[in-house]
Length: 90
Image (tube, rainbow, N blue to C red; front, side, top):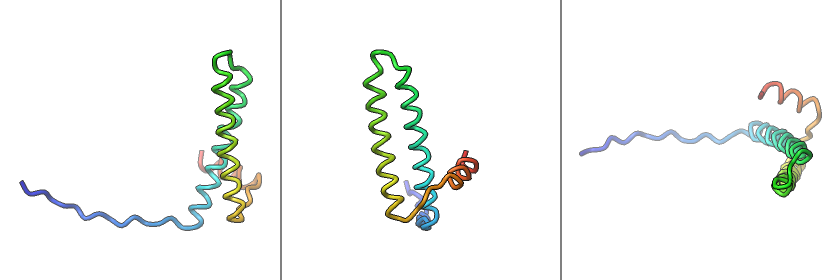
């Protein structure tokens, strides 16, 4: 009849470095998704052409947004950082 209440722990905010890293990883994922959509579009049959064209547009919009966000924060995604992150996150 009585319920035992468990004390919840306070959620810890992410540091600025963690947020920046998460943004960079999101950019890399968006670039990969866009490349994949382009490849799929090249080999799409009649019924899937519209689907992949919408997917390309959506991924391009997402990538543009993330890149603008990174630019505002002063984050520069160069090839070395991208390779390092891909190697350590994959």
